[in-house]
Image 1 (cartoon, rainbow, N blue to C red):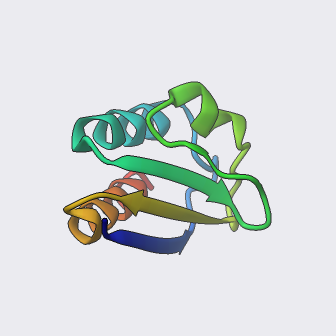
Image 2: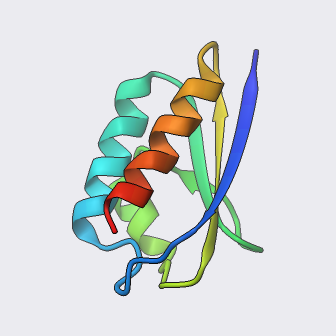
Length: 88
């Protein structure tokens, strides 16, 4: 099974708040892959859970790491990073 990992710095002044967390979690769930997200230095949480994503408390300037396990891991990881960046 393929695994892809991507990191990005969150530039949104309010970090990952409700709307981007919801968009991100929905896309992670829809991908059908095993997706986790972690704040740098923190524990990974399921990316398909809005509450888990918001529970990370990601603020502006924080680095997050997305890990995708599955057949289409690279494309899913790119899509999810783009969702986080587009939310800014």
